[in-house]
Length: 475
Image (cartoon, rainbow, N blue to C red):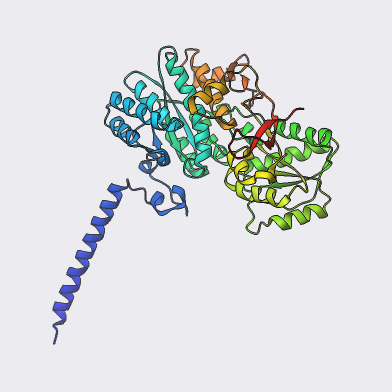
């Protein structure tokens, strides 16, 4: 017969051994992966369920060259470069990053790290850029190419009053909570003089109060929600006001396309989408048209393209305006494919992507978009040619406006006052002006870009290698 006391002893020993193994496993996990449990468990590293990432987890989303954030573009040379950078061997890091660029010339992260390594041994001026690497890599790379090109050009020319420019990259996943927390990290880092970002309006609106309270300039290249104009004196944008986009599109619809009843599909979860719907509704009514009654929401769980088109037909619509968020391009493209030419297709700048052409094909032919930039729309501007030479192909409007955001910061810092407050005062000065990819850059008192939108149309062509291209619309 077994002794109960012996059984108890065995049980206690077993529990102690199990606990020790679990503790050791947890220690190994947290040290191997930097404690980034939320990032390992899923949702593209976004925080869920109210969990707040630690400062260390946030730091793992920021890099000046010591870690790779865009793993899709990893090369052996790039890996060697970040290891050398992390060890403070900046000369070796620069050589390795340069070798990596020879293999992957269109990798903006590596070009930024190369310039950071060249600047690290001096006394660089530092800025940051926050993009959605985890949730929308293509858009993140588009913005980073503009930032990288501006940094590369100014550093090759000797820097800003003799000081090279260094750029920290952050991955915010277009997540408002993460964007706000990253903004706090930037504000607390006294070396950061300005931030380019964020991409989505929701992310920008969440982070803007932090920048405003902390007195740190933020310039968004792509957030165009109407309410951003009210965010404060340190918040700027290089994308034109959403009102200009709505006015340009509505005039085309009524005066050129001769359509009078436009149905709108938008994303109720995206602040910019709601803003453009409201502004377009006001603009088209003012121009003599109207908006057809249609309940179409790209974020709806029961979204059905066939049902939407049937409702649009019943409402007498002769045009369809698509305003998806960057995270819901697929439903919009599917709706365009189901349309099969029945309604005139219109769209926001969000649809100005390779994905639209690649997946939409003939279904998006003739679709008209209101956008802030096209390489052929600004004659005499050297940016498109330089961008093509640098990246090996054409870039889009997010690259151009990311470049313009950096050019604004560079121009402001060139005035000699390299403080956060000094930069804000220079950008807010009524006479401030500089030149970028979209021509003259000036800001209104609200911080909005003083400029207009242009129209592009999808047409058959060979530049994008999809069979279709975006071309400027002759007005």
